[in-house]
Image (cartoon, rainbow, N blue to C red; front, side, top):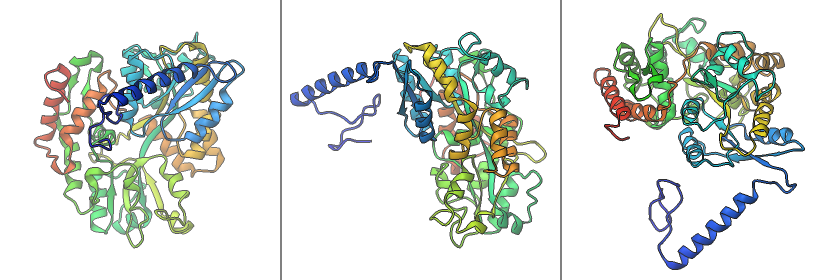
Length: 463
């Protein structure tokens, strides 16, 4: 990114460059003073009550704003602050604030992969039975063993060193979306598990395509991780060892994952923007006019997205066309081996440096309530983290019952990304060695990525 005069943006702040002239320096000083004053004043609202800043990702913002208002009390107010759209940029902004011991970071939406890093760094308040109602910490940890209300896959995302450091809000997962007419034409029985090879061949032989997320970003890591786990392997293991974790991607599972990516990249089913594809770009070919449609792996929001686009550009032409949308479990990497659907979502963390930890913890429980989860599912397609909320969503009739159960099962039987304090390093190293998908080679890519991850973890190489 460059400023209007052509200078680069600051790599630390992301702000546009400022010239070195004396008037500009005076202006910058004045701006800094005004900003500091505004920050100090923002700690209290107009009423004099403390203001809890809640940093949120861009999904479901209207519901966040609704619950910020509803969960504010006579003792405090909640203010919604918007984070960048990409998970990587969200992590950078939150990490900068927390590393500086910023007391205004009270509540935050966390991608599950941030929790281990932030907890390990001491940036999150621990969730305990003493600082929450209804023994919430025990409820979360018990859910991992199947004795609590949370989906096991969602509960697992907030635990680090056997202790919860965040509260699950919504639990995301990916399924295989497809046009029923395309699958029927290809002769695929979608009531049975299908493999990536079957999906790629079916699309290529019948004028369809396969939508994935393969740009150089976190979504690509999600795909790679799911492929590796679906083949029975892991990218890294023994993650509690930190920098000494075992790097396992150079394995039969890693090579099986690379084979799938290579097969798609070399196939006529590959979409033209494969190397820069993301969650949004892969939506477009499902109902493209005159096209056969696609098979697409994507998150739970897809159903509500297409339902809201009936008769609109990019969506199904009418209700009949919308009924051609099908869904099935995430494709298997290896035939006969159960797939490991990606597990994502958002967890709510309380900043360790907040000046109002009791208020922030109370607010976190309010904004993760059953009703809040139901509203996120029904209004934004972001599915719950608790069984109680799932039951209400299923009973609402807003989603087909089999789709709701597919989401729930995929979270509980899916595969999380590596839980490690060094996740950001590992993810970046894997992305860089596996991108572009057109260059992936089963004989070399897993080995090269394992070596690079190892070097990065040991401090022998820089990202």
